[in-house]
Image (cartoon, rainbow, N blue to C red; front, side, top):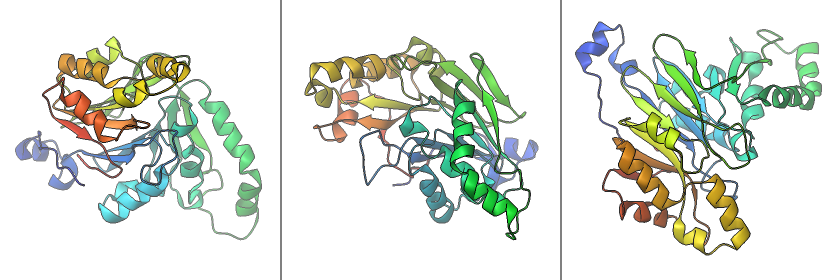
Length: 302
């Protein structure tokens, strides 16, 4: 399914600001809507925001890189070819949000023209150093033999560990703001607010109910938020109920968030539902919130 989000930036304003029609309109593509629960239909967490000819990726769960390549091929998203991706933002260091970090860094790095820039919580540098160690033999083989390599240092990643909440990226056209969210015992964990010339987007990362997120999401064009079906949650053992209640957002809580924030569109991702049909996540919210709700699937575009 491909969902076309209405264009907010007028053509005249786009042209006046130096954008062409093709790159003035921000594209938002879901690269992974899954969870730690294995799935052959949903990759691990991943989101792409494309603006001004650049891709900005948020999270890198398992399978995200293949989804990016698929989007490059089927959605004409040249910016998502792995060597063209320059910016990755990690919400937190759980495996289902990071397994494809090394995949993205390693894929065709010898054809890169610029290093990958990675932003995320404290601990991201140690994770990156682990990637270097894991791939040390491969790196030595590629740089020490007769393989053509653009620059033997381009396997390295520019790591930016987030010191505090606030704007962590601003190139004069796109800004990315990190804000702390409550993901249970996982600290720090961040949500991100992305503002482009024509869209405002909030990506929740993994979080329980968050007043801070409501503040950042109020009136945005897209709120892309994790969720757990209440029907599925109620059938879990008590220990798992307690864990999920502390770390994730129940459908009734997300409806409360949406009713206060009033986003133009609410997109559900990282959809935990267990024994309940996945569609319950959407129907439970719609019973309490009358705004636009989309049950996200990999490669949906807005």
